[in-house]
Amino acid sequence: MQPFDYVRVREISAALAEADSSADYLAGGTTQLDLMKDGVLRPRRLIDITRLPLHGIEERQDTLFVGALATMEELAADPVVGRRLPFVREALLRSASVQLRNMATIGGNLLQRTRCRYFRDPKVHACNKRGRGTGCAAITGTHRSHAVLGTSEHCIATHASDVAVALIALDAVVHITGAQGDRDVPLTGFYRTPGDTPDIENDLRPGELITAVEVPLLPPGARSDYLKVRDRMSFEFALASAAAAVVLGDDDVIRWVRVGLGGVATVPWRAVEAEAVLTGSRAGIEVFTNAARAALAGAEPHPQNAFKVELAQRTLVRSLQTITGVSA
Image (tube, rainbow, N blue to C red; front, top):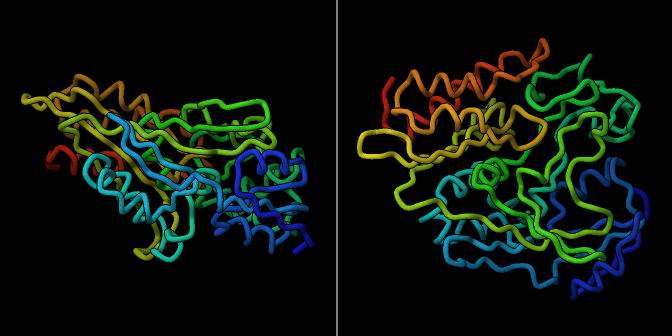
C-alpha cells in the first residue's frame, strides 16, 4: 500500500475543503481498503468522514430519508423499512454478513466498485476501468460472472450492489453536495454504463460527497420481493437478482409495478421494458414470461455468460410468482 495522509473531519464544509484530485473520502472502508492494499486505488490523502452528521434515518411523509453514513445494518433494522420497504430489507440482508453490514455505509454501498477479477488485479494491464484505452481482459478471458446488459466493447464488468437494485426500482434520489453547491440526482441517472469511458462510473464530480438517499415508500397494498441467485447459499455476489414490487387490483390486474435487475448489468438495472409489459396486464405466467423477455431483449452475452440471459428471465418470473401467488 502506498503511503497516504489521514485527515478526520467533523463538518461537511471541512470535508469539501480537504478534497482534491489526490484525495478519497473514507467511511466504512470495507472495500476501499482492500483496493488500496492491492494497489488498485492509490489516494495520497484519506478524508475520514465518519464523524459527519449524516447518520440518521427519518420517515418524511411517503419518503424515507437515509443519511449516507447510515450503515446497512441500521437500515435493515429500521421498522419503516421492514413495514413499507420489505424488499429493500431483503436485499440488505442477502448482501453481506452482519459484521460487514455493521461497518458498510449506504453511501459507500452505492459507490462500491466492481468485483471483476481483472479490475482488482493491477498486474493485469488490460482494464479500461483502471486505465482508459488499455483494453478489457474479461472479454477474451474468464467472464462467467460478467454483465450481459449495458455493456460495451470496452467493458463488461458487473455492478455488485444488491440494495442499489431495489433502490433503483423505487426511483430513489441521491443527495449530493460539493464546492459548487447541492444537487439531487435520481438513481436511474446517477450510474453510467461504460460506453467509451468505463473509468467514469457515476455522476459524482471531483470532490463531491453523497449526503443522503431519498427513498420513496411503496404505495399502500404493494407486495414486493428480492430474489438473489448465486453459486452458493453463503454470502456471495449475484449471478442474477430481481427486485420487484407490484400493486394488484381485485381482478388480479397489475395496477402498478417496479422492477430492478442485478448481477447481469454494468449498473443496477431498471427494467422499464418489463414494467411496460406488466402494467395493466392480468397477472399470469405468460405475461411474466413476456415481461422477462422484454427486460433481457437488449442483452449482449459472451460465450461463458450466455446462460445469464435465461437465468435472469427465470429469476424475474419466479419473483413475480412469489409476489402475486401465481403458480406455474
